[in-house]
Image (cartoon, rainbow, N blue to C red):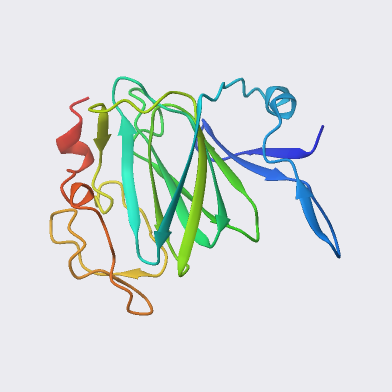
Length: 200
């Protein structure tokens, strides 16, 4: 094996990627992506685009997916801390509708690979977070879909978040444990739940 450790998650198609970090009194070096290491673990994805975002504490982005052009995503945090979540949307999957989450931080340097066929979202737990991700297909305007981040059927356990479900994806009434209000885009507060979005 090379410089990157790949571990399977309980849901097929999800992987935790951990780089080998080489540090001394000057700082550190690590490989964040190595095609050979990925292929040795059965991951043959080809990335076509790199994205980066910055979000402030309490921001929740998601749950997003592309309908006709699904994307695999390799995500990581280069500053701050987020709780990152994937929801299985693959028709016929034994884990359809199930979720898996992992804390990604600038300290643990973990990456999360989410195969095509999942919805994705994250909650910012630090004052700010810079989030980077590689994708296996381009962004297609008009192709984006979404799910309610708080759909009780999915039942994501977002850390440090309190509030009562009112039947919608509205952020109203939700805060982090330190009182920071939950912050969602207008669009992310209008997504519907799993049953109302899909009719499998």
